[in-house]
Length: 638
Image 1: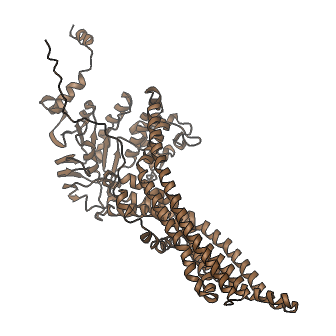
Image 2: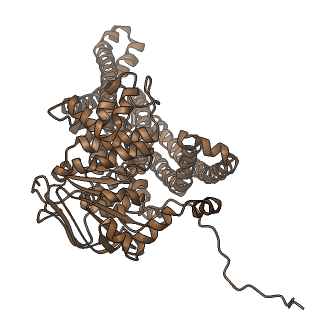
Image 3: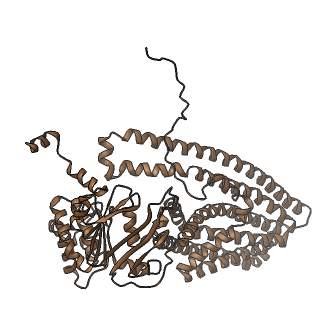
């Protein structure tokens, strides 16, 4: 009889790991310590300087003109306010004696001229800001792209590097607004200074009340921006998830599987769940900001009431005249507008500044991993050697390659084989100088890749990667890559003949002039196999000393694959060729075969040697031959 005693499972319950985007420095609690009123308000001058520094970098004359217009506009504001007193005084006197009316004319003309000039200056300021904004955005984007493309390839393997790039890209988007926000802030400050100068002249006792009307609103604005930014940080992961899901749901590469796997409802549920979390966080932040704004406005309103009561008291007590009181009314209104502008535009600028901080942080990070190697320009390599090379990807649990020795010489074809995850692609990246080893050395003709100029090194490399680029350019440009040979199209056709891409080009409606991008108007689409022939052609066209091919025929039919491999020997006459392939029949063309197991070289030899002795290569080879079904095998035995 079976034992029916209940057994309690004490094994900890396992949960599915949830997709979560992580990035260094993204902890909201840590950032909250720095997002305070004091720290953020002190940053405004820094942000303004950064804005005008970028403007100076892209267009000095426009920047000088903008600053000059801002200063002149502020002077006109002050002049207009001072002229107001004289004009009002003359108008009040003319009310009792019309003969004095002409006395007000000069002041009125000054007032009208100042107002007219300020209007013209405002148009000029707006035009200059509109001119500088797009230029600043392109400059910010250029600096970001320059930093990214000049970073070591290993940077992309650091967790969060791409996420920080996306955050920096947001900084690029808002950078065009920075100059406008800065000039509006400067304009508001100029208005405030002009009004404060008039108030200090007529009734200095009102200045403390003027400050009191601004401080509560400024603190409320800063605190509200802090709440909003922290909400943005808390929703960053879900917003990234929304972007990723949107891409997978709509991109043509997954469109067929979305339908055949009936996956859309499941992914849409994930999309809705992430969106709901974003909405919940944003709703909380919006309510919190509303309460903060209400308190700030209430306190500022009370201070404003006291300030206007002070004007009435001064007028009633005879400390100021009617003309001065009228001028104070205009000055206080101007000052209030200036204060509101400083608070509003300052908040906008601080928000933009935080995104620009992400931009600047990424550039700094990328610069810390920039290509900082030697300046030696290599010739066409005669021999590339790995000496006891070890490589581990950032934050990986184990080495991908461990103390690997490897050699390839000019005129030689070396095949690299191994199971998935054995380190084959990593080996190719080290050979071609894309990555530098953690220990050991990679040397070209006796010179370490650390000492070689990386750009000069890559000119001597031709790579056919597993994931090859499909550039939205013409067939010719896809092969030349902007680096034509002296023979021009003859060199392109030679490379196409060697890779089988000539058959692809023959089917294109405009030959080499055909745009290979269906997404663009007039473009023509290619199959994966056709694209792989183009990718092989571009590597051959480079005529580099080291040709590295990582599964170069994975998408090709048998005829196209045969054409490439039978032509490798001719290509190897003036090149060193390293080939990675899972189709072991293709390794017959190699002079030597190197077998990788778990990041180590386990065997080396010719095809005949490795198939004749026990080992991984022989095991894989026999497995690839074991493809017949049982009935077919029985027929073969008969």
